[in-house]
Image (cartoon, rainbow, N blue to C red):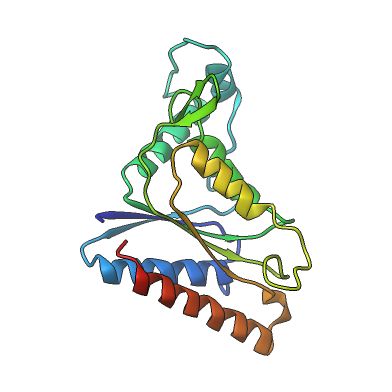
Length: 206
């Protein structure tokens, strides 16, 4: 493993549980692969523009040659090449309104691009990127997976489906839940997440 792409999607500059957990994942990967280079990509509001009209026209005109220097297509190509060059992807993201924050959605819209990272086939869509490990660190104010779950989870199934669409299928999720409770509840959630990381990295070689 030579290159690790780390997406930090939290709007918080300090005290982010998803950033803390994703850094712990990156640290473990670097310990396993000491020569690996970490490419940091902060995805806070406004760091990546949403797709624009040039992007939409290029995708809506089959067979047309895309001008990669126009509008957000240039951003899309940069982000796709950054992903292609990475041997591993680490995403640190909070859960916003049961799903991914808008900054991460903007990144997804850029990298999930027809005739570039996936193609259309009679049975649906076929990803063209080579598979690589993806680690997703999720934080949430409430509980969405452990019993009793008090809120829906559209984040993990959505990220699984959209990353599968471009060919990324080896996906591992870790989470710190009920962060809003603070105190002992948050401390327990952090300890549980760290224990899950320890078990995972003790059992795998990537």
